[in-house]
Structures are given as C-alpha cells and as structure tokens.
Length: 408
Figure: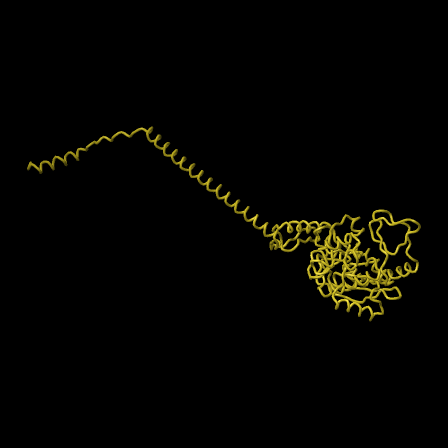
C-alpha cells in the first residue's frame, strides 16, 4: 500500500512525484474554503481525528498564526475499538500525536489515495508498541487504518499537498478516542485507557486554549506539551524530563482551565450520561486479537469476528467460523480438506482392521469353546442301561392274552 511512497521518500523526488495534484474539483474546493476563511491556499494545516464521533477535521493557519477549522469529513470506517494500538495485528487504529511529512503521501495507494499516520512515534516505540502501514486512505475499508470516501480523501489530500507546496515540513495529526471534554472523561473514568487519555488531554487543552498545534515531546515514557528545554538539554523518550518550563501565560491559562475542567468533571459524574463505547483492554486483549490475525492471514479457519476480552479477563469468540476469502485461504482450505480425507481413510482402515481382528478372536473363542465341550463330553461316565423288572400283574396279563390267541 505504501511501497511507492517509501521508495520516493528515500530519494530527492519532487512534490509533484510524491504528492501529485488531486483532481480539479478537489483543488478548487480547497481554494474556496481557504479564501472564505481569510486564508491563503498554501498556508499550513493541522488535522484531528475523533473515533467516537467518526470525524476528521482539517484546521488551517490564519494570518494571525492561529488555526481555524475549515473542513470536517465523516470517517467512512476505522478499525478496532477505542484505545491506542499496542501490537502488530491487533487491528487497532492508533491514538496519539503524529507527524505527516510529504514523503508519507502515497498517490499510488491501492486504496485510491493515502498518507501514513506516522505510527509508531517515539512514544509508541519507547513502550514497545509495534505496527506498520497505519494509514488514512480512501476506498472505505479498514484493517487498522482510518478511511474516507474517495471524494473526501481527494479533498484532504489536496489540503495536505497545498500546505507542503507552501513550505510546510510536516503536518501534525492529533488522534483521539473522542472529544476530550470533562463530560466525556467522566463517562470513561473506569476505562483501562483512562490514564492514557488523561495524558493526551493536556495537548488537547493546550490547542483549545491557543489554537496553535502544541509542541510535542516525549520523556519519562510520556507525552509532554509546550515545554522548552533550557540550555543544551534535550528530551529523551526513556530518560528523565529536562528542566523545561511551560511559557508563563500558557501555564496560567492552563491551570485555570484545569480547575474549571475538574469542577465540570465532578458535575458530570452526578448526571446520567450516554453509556461508554467498547475499548481495548490493554496488551492482553491486543495479543489475543493479534494471534487471531496471524491465523487468519495464514488462511486458517477462525471465528468470523476478532475475539474480545471481558473485564474479568475471559476471552469471548464468535461461534461462526470462516477463513479469509483469498488465494491463501482457498489453498489452506484445500490442504485441510486433503488432510481430513487422509485422516478419514486412515481411521476407516484402522476400524476395518480392528473389526477383522475382533471377528478372528470371536471365531477362535467359539472353536475353543466347542473343543472344550467335546472333551468334557468324552470324559463324562456313560449311564448304565436300566434293568426291566416285570411285575406279577404284568406277567399275568400277558398269559391271559396268549390264552386268547390259542383258545386256552
């Protein structure tokens, strides 16, 4: 999907090669939106994605340096649940702060047009998170990505291309599970990803206050925003955070916002809210889904939908089974069918041999029983013939009959 972009990113290709112009309609739409909001066509942009709200926003820089939203496009589809991506194959679309460069743009995507989100970033890597080719693309399909209709992807692509042509080096892409309002944070207070989302919320709030994309760094294995290291110190994802104060005006405004947000959070807890949506339950569930993905990619027969993990750690899978409809799936089906037939034939042969053996053993037992019976009969003593003892009355009766024959 991104082979063309990766090949071009490694050489001195021009923007025309990496990100050629979208169609005229998309370019005209971008120019009109920019002009109507008092912006130039090539001014810088920033993008935000919200999973729960199914939306991608494009923000553009105005002459005063602040960014204002110029377009909002519905997401056609995104993969997985709320929560970050943990490992290759978990089918999760990432969350966090990412950077999109001109070399990330892929005009030759199999999904119409696409750009790489930049996952994994330094935060993901320091946490050992893996995955590749996590894109925003057209064609309305997703296996770990964010997709738009082809028409909307054309427009987003046009915004990015015009910004790059104006000199922008990278576009900040902020990806959130939902709008990080106090009310939504209260809805998800018991979610296993709550601490991660609370960390993202600082960057979300900074942008809300300043309307300028925050400076993003990673130290002590966490995101930090709008911190400026003193002297020649720098940020190391796994190292201690350097002395890096936040600008005083921003620090004051942010503290005031936190106080208000805390009160709003408490108030929201007392109100009935929309039930939270499903989220991934950490690396444990991610690993279960990744194992399912590996089996599926090999063409094995697996549950139709990815397995899920309950709060108590139990794995729940659909009873409906199937395999990927692709050459590898059909090949695996043929192999498994041949193996099943071979196994059936072997079992039939074994069963016939066992029946033949049992028949022979029964015949042998019957013959032995007959032999023993004959031997026992031959050895048994023969009974003596009974002696006939005629009674006197019997003799008299015979004599009387004889007399009758001879007239006596």
